[in-house]
Image 1 (cartoon, rainbow, N blue to C red):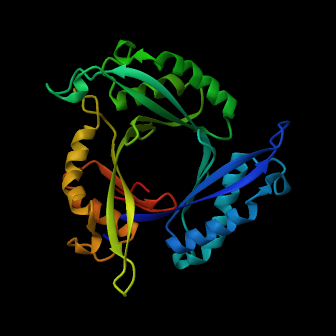
Image 2 (image 1 turned 30 degrees about the horizontal axis):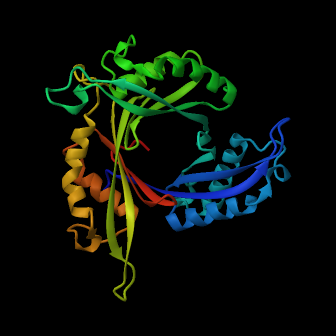
Image 3 (image 1 turned 180 degrees about the vertical axis):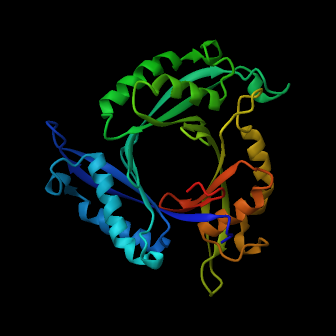
Length: 341
């Protein structure tokens, strides 16, 4: 691994369980837990499986007085830290972050001492970008089914408070022409994220805002500035064993770009179309090929792929901060380019 790159492995696992919160009736959930760590992937997967298996098809009130999302996520984080601590170099604890999703639109994330809850919602709206070059497709009036993901401090903001605050903002955005809203005359993803951030930061203890313009591209605003991402999927084969057998995956690559300021004219950190174009030569090497035919690739795990992509991309994308690669929802890796771990 290049000294300028830091890797983290990502494992995901689901479990089915029932619970009763407060005065509510007992009800069931399809929980999903995603864990990220610098521990080896096999160890991380094993530790996560051992935690989730105990709760599968059980009543969570048998384990906790109030099995809220926060309680569950914090327990998983501590349990993983305990199980993986013996793997730390020099006796240091392994880094672990956990995200628990209890329904498609709500969940909790634990990163060290920080615990945030999140809510996702959708709205439909039209817009155009007035400052793009002539002929750019975004210069035409068009629409999106936007998705918004809001993160707030979990200890000081109840789910109901967050939902109520978002309802007021949602009413302004849904079925609107965004260019006609004050502050959104140039409604790039970044400007829209900033607009939502400004509207909500004094109402709830806001940690960050994410806006998904499409299913493959979006923008994030937090106290450090802006991050955008672009996803690309590719199909590839890889050697399976020494007997000459191969297997294959439908891979997902996610490129993150980070910056403190936006282009004052365009209103974006980088054009999503530019990011896609820069990635295109790499995509052409990967899609519908065997990975052992690609120069520079000697291993084929997600972490190696992410590091290879980052090395290929960072000269053309100086804003590149992170590359994620997943071979499925349960198995992936993240490589951080600028040390933002």
